[in-house]
Amino acid sequence: MIKRSIARRYARAIFELARAQGTLEQVQGHLELVSGVLGPAEVLGKIFRNRLVPPEEKKALLIKVLAGRVSGPVLAFLQVIIDKHRENYLPEIVAEFKSLADEARRILEVEVQTALPLEKDDLEILRQDLEAKLGWQVRMKTSVAPELLGGLILKVGDRVLDGSVKRRLETLRRQLVSR
Image 1 (cartoon, one colour):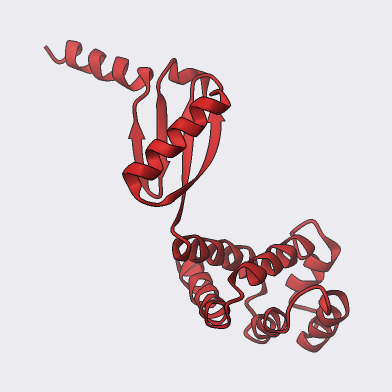
Image 2 (image 1 turned 120 degrees about the vertical axis):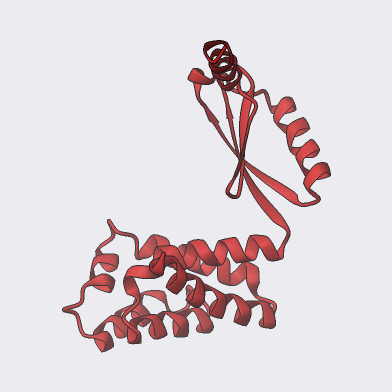
């Protein structure tokens, strides 16, 4: 919880700067690039998170690798992260930034689980229905879970709408057993 709170604070700072400068899309793209370059499996990422490497060396290395590839504000932001020893929070900061940017653009991510893969036309109809009901643009992430037997489960934020056949059968079983 503390990690998320810290990440959200840093994400909000760079988000507010990007929004004020009108560079939200650009900063998001640059943060995603940085997140990939500094990923856990990447050599540069291991150096970036290593406490034994002095901050000045980390900053110099970042400038050498990222100058010209990311904007000045993003590079300055990364240097602040290094100065504050928050390098390990970068993946969470980028995720929180993306969440803030989506909220500002009124984009909602919806996870859809179905027993069988949905056809493109069915996905589009579902997306349009959700957008009409929610009043936000919807980005869907789909997955297949055969154990659902039929129907679907929607996850919107921290809300779960379970319309699966499996849940209906479990509810019916509980009702029959309790009688």
